[in-house]
Amino acid sequence: MRTRTVTIALAILLLALAPSAMGQDAPVTGSTPPVGQGSGNVKLRLQLDRDVIKVCEPIYLSMTAEQFDESAPPSVQVRFKDEAPIDLGPMEKQWQRATPLPTIKRMGVMLLDTTVGQTRRYIFDQPGVYHLRIKIGPDITPLKVTVDAGSLNDAKAFAELTPENAAAIFAEAPSDPPTIELVSACEALARKYPDSSAADYCRSYAAIAGFKNTAQINKRGGGKLVWDSVAEQLLRVLPAHQKDFFGEEVGYYTAYSQGLCHEYIDVVKTIDSIPTRMTAYGDLMYAMKREVASHLRPQEVKPPATPAQ
Image (tube, rainbow, N blue to C red; front, side, top):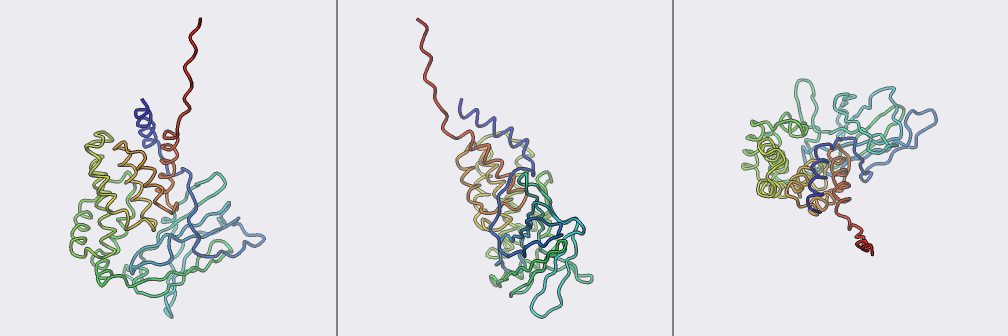
């Protein structure tokens, strides 16, 4: 009876989960100047998912506040060494908004690529130190990102992947079906450059595509017989992203597949292994954990009623 109760509760949860679920803050990687009088920002706080990446990798910028200045969209500039700053502009369509807590609003954006002239290129395409300048209303915050060269094949693998395909890996929503061409391109690149960070992202995308394809055929049925291999594939790729924002997406699908295997303790362990809560996937994981944990807590056992004399 207990297992059935947890199964039903998780099934209802997975049908009802929405990105408005509660989340948690990630560690701050930059300091924010105090908000001055007259500013529309209240308790503004900026975060990066990490401040050291490999060449061509994306980073995720998250901002939280009790109130954002809405007089103009946030803007981001990136400067590398003595080169002219690259103005990424307001990026109105890219910012993701959420309310992870009743009193907290959140805006986040992935920084991966930009267009210079007629050429689409990765933002962090050379090793070294990059300086970010984020402006929202009257407040300007400087942040710093260090880019390592990575393996010998990292830059080459990302170049062959192309910024367009790399962006497509992160752009898919949970309801979007996987792209067959992108899955094929990712699998080919992972075979050609298996030790590259680009291959890590590609293997993760292919594992997520495996989850979606299985769900398309079996819906949420089949139990461990259907979902165990899917969970194992996701568990293999998760360690590469447990410290970056993409780990929230991979962790969400991993925990989801474990839940469909009825392995609820593993669901909680997987979610706890992801340190950040910066994206909608982090909110979904947090909601999943709360629901599952509420059914796994020891239940009070009442003594049987004394039979009437």
